[in-house]
Length: 51
Image (cartoon, rainbow, N blue to C red; front, side):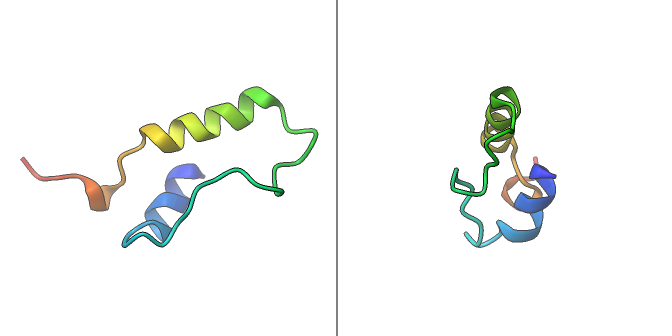
């Protein structure tokens, strides 16, 4: 899901991936951290360079 959001909304700077009030209180902390770590590490197709 994280990759889909970045691919669909991120090109041209259209996506701000940040924490906010929409993280539910019962969401496991490890899931929240994993989501942000994956978003930070993911290189979207529009940012990859061809070798």
